[in-house]
Structure formats: structure tokens, C-alpha cells
Length: 273
Image (cartoon, rainbow, N blue to C red; front, side):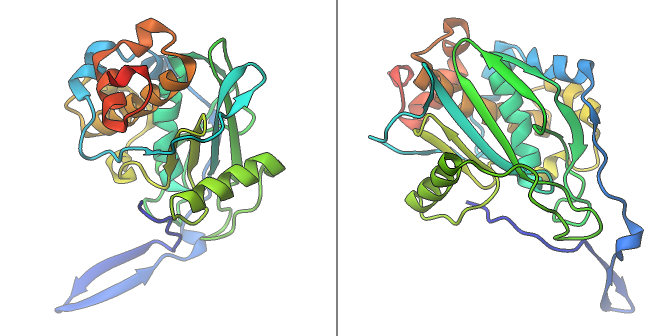
């Protein structure tokens, strides 16, 4: 897994054959803003077609989620559950949220999502994304629990604070399954039913660099776009993981060829046959 890296943005320039480093001061950059997500952007994410899913498939640029066999099911009431633990400053969380939103739009409905960027002082600065803070989700098939555990940087690298405390259960899941796969507790952590896990980066946030949410969303109609390849490819894996814990429901979502292929690659659920 790619480790979470926190550090100041550094510009490198060549002058008379010498590499000179210019560290940006805190006054050179402004903290990320948060504003209501554009309905048009959310509609583009929610309406990616099976044809696009199949054209993208499971690209080599996207990491396959880790699988745990024989673990107790993660449930919330009568429904299977998934748990996301992330942070607003984190560029890898920024990339992952695109795929999580795309995936769970196939099973239910989000409300009150906001657009933002990752920290301007971290690696992959200002990665365009969303935040789950104060958002909600409803589904007849699966419960999605989201925790933005830490907020965004306010005045430089490392100036973020706890935004949403973890419950004891959430903390135990994060600790237990990070250790299960030999990983440190890091962002993002995503647990689908205690069966499929994302710990750290799934794909390079750099594919989103320098673009707006609207530009990335508009490209979701084009399976050859690099950002579309990685977002949809990750969503195909996550969709297969959710289908595995919902009993392959709904059928229209879980029967898509790319989703079945992702399930076979992970070796999970009835879809792997």
C-alpha cells in the first residue's frame, strides 16, 4: 500500500546547474474552501453507465482491495455495513471519495455532500474532492458509515485537528484490520462488510491534479480519460465488494460484466463464478 505522506509543498528549479528549493510559506497559500456540491457534478457521478464500467474494467493502475476470509460480518441493524475513515487534508482520501460516491450511488442516495480539496500544503496539493462531513446516506441494501476523523489544514502542513471522533467500534475496526494486513493505521481506511478493505491509496491522486470537480465529472462519459479509468476502475472493485455482502442485490448493479470480473479478481461472493 502507498503510505500516507504529509509534508510541505516544495518547488524545485534549476539555476546555473544547481537545484534550488523554494519552500512555500504559509502566507503563500490559502486553506481549502467547502461549498455545497454541484447537482450537475453529482448527477454525472451517479449516472455512469454499464457501458462505461465495462469499457474501463479493472485497470492495472488501480490497486485490488485486500480480502479477509472468515471474519464476522459487519452489520448495522439488519443491513450489511461499510465503514469509511478518512480526513479532509488527505489527498488519498480525496481520490477515494470519488469512487465511494460512485459506488454507493448505485445502491442508494447521498444528501448534503460538499465539494472541497485536500490540503494545499500536503503532497498532491488541492486534490479536488468532496467531504462526507455532515452528509448522509440512505439505502435499502447497505448502511454506509462515514467518518472524516480529521479536518483540513488551516495554516500549513499538519495544522489539522480532530473533526469527528471515532466510536470505540470504529476505532477497533480501524486498528484490527490495519494490523491484520500488516499496515499502520492510515487514511483512508475503508471496510466493506469486514470482507474487502482499502487501506491507503487505491490510485494516484495526481490524475485529478489541476482540474475542477466539474471537469473530472464531465470526463466520466469518456472511458479513455485517465481520471475516469481510475475512478471507475476503483468503483468497479468497490461495487463488487458491496454486492458480495448484499447477496448480489440489486441485480441490475451486480450483474454488470465489469463488476463480476472485479469479484472474480478478488475471489469474493457469488459473482466470482
